[in-house]
Image (cartoon, rainbow, N blue to C red; front, side, top):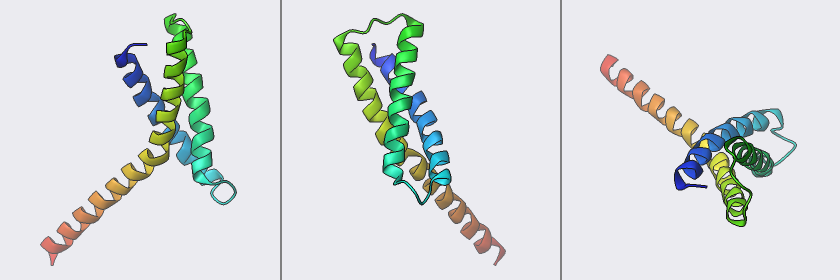
Length: 107
């Protein structure tokens, strides 16, 4: 696996996993801890997405490439755990700042 492919898969799988994790958080908000949901989702997304990419691109399953699958899955887990919440928080802060500026101009 090349570094470019690793980063590309990381970006795509983190976005997908973050969206799935957010949907699962809303569906199972009080029954399962969100970190566990993110871990389970990232495992299936990371491993499944990596193996699918390997098969479609004809990449052999060598020791190094299997290690990359594990590292990619770990990265996807961390990204899905903190990624969407932080993006949503940043958007909310931008909206709050914009609303304060509008109120200041009107008042």
